Length: 447
Image (cartoon, rainbow, N blue to C red):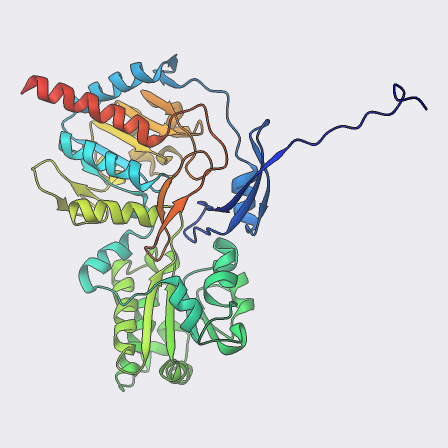
């Protein structure tokens, strides 16, 4: 066979390797991912070390063919859209900024600054998930630590109202249940694991003790454990209320006291049931009580990739984590009054800026009905239900995949982002800075 007749072989695309990339799908914010990127197609084709949720996050990401921005559904340039956004914000009297949990801390800081300049209200997705936890932290404080300390020290791990086997798959293997640590060298064999929940989830299969309590009885069970921690027997009525015997609780408390380092990891099963922030106050207080006997901590299992970052940024700038009104020149915190879903449902908000969130797909109907009647600004990489009805909609790049920056892990540890490939669209930070400069220019001109 001549050279001319030799069969042609298709060359594989050259892949860019990104070491120590960060997955921003959930609050674990795993920063040990190795990405293989097809630069020509602008697609991630391999995500080594990522869990099933992380792989879905990376593999399903692609650059959509959309205009830079739209006003009333008509394509416009970024500059035109920024001008219109600034006009909306400056003309509002009760504006609300919402979302922030799926963007960088750098963008979050600018969003808070804009809201402060115009005297609006800043709120995050925390208000509809772990909001009660934020209220409890303000009320009783928390005994806390990093996930690294749990990995290296915890010989007793209790999951309460959480299902990490499905919601945070690598939490087990990287941080809490399976990994070998300095003081737990045999990993899982050195740990006692407990799950408290109203139903038998996949997490129940991975633990040593599963306590299935009756719905809406978390507070009573937690308070009973607090009593036992102080050497007081609970009232027998607790057994009927919770469905768990006092003898079982005493055995559990004995195991907790014998632990060298215990961690209570609680989820939205605790915050979204009867009691809400009172439940979280009880679990935080239980961890504090246990420190009379041994070392114990309590940590919330956070969902969105940078929801902890949103709480931190809003807290260090205003003193409160969410639902903060800045219209009087100083911050006022009042969940139920200044949280977005309530402001919209009561018809009080006259403008909204939504950043990396989709309230039209999950807010109450009354809130959604009002949302479509007011001028709105939306920043989102996807054409979400909220972006579809926005007055001004910006197409943005995706943090962590296209944009560098900083995010906070669920234990409040800041993690840097290493993007895989560039996007033709601007980042949330760039757009928000453009809006802020226009707002300030017009305010200074008017003063």
